[in-house]
Image (cartoon, rainbow, N blue to C red; front, side):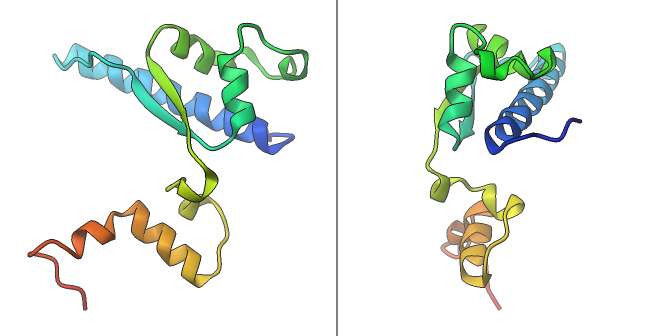
Length: 127
């Protein structure tokens, strides 16, 4: 895997890798008899990466990327995925990939693990 030269490229590389994994498992599930009628939703917090994935042509600034990283564009055009912009504070996976102080980390962890929902469950006892 190539080291990304900037944050947009890092997000784009990671999104493309996630889409390739999703396509692999979706095809496997289909062979097992499961089907999905609607595209999977991919949440990104980098608007520049979204713009690159949705652009009709690859821009001059993105030509340094290998073709495999542009699979996300093809998957979007074929209806395999939908891309949705999420504001950075609402991105759940940031708790796993960024450094936070204790309080923001715990908030992110709780949102990622849906702990706020567990606390309302009659079977869950914190302690």
